[in-house]
Amino acid sequence: MTAVDPELHPDYWLVARMAAGEVTALDELRERHERTTYALAYSILMDPVRAEHTVSEAFLEAFRLAAGFAPGDVTVLAWLTRLTRQRAEAVAAHS
Image (cartoon, rainbow, N blue to C red; front, side, top):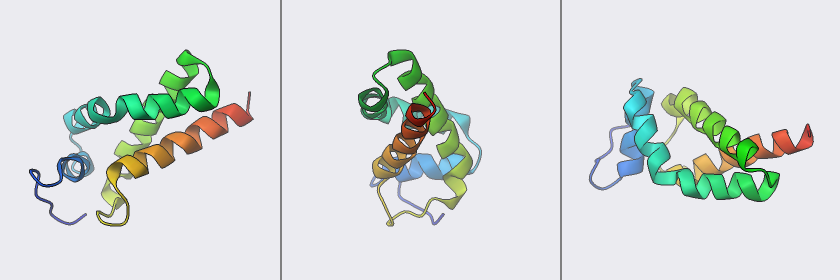
C-alpha cells in the first residue's frame, strides 16, 4: 500500500494502519462504516444476529487483507461492501 495523506483520505489511512497491524484502526474503520455494512448484511439475511456476525467477519477479513488493498482501485467503502456482500450471500446460501 502506498503512502496516503490521512487528512485527505481518512479511510485509506485507516487501512494503511490496519496493514501495519493496528487493531485500533480496524475499530475506527468499523465505527465509520458499520451502519452501511450492517444494513447491507441485514437486507440479505433478514436476521439481526446473523447480520451482526457477518459484519464482524467482514471487518476481520478486511483486517487480514489490508496489506493488499490498493488505493485508487476502489473506495474503502466499496471494498467493505463487497466483503460484506460476499459473506452475507455465503451465509444465506448455507441457511
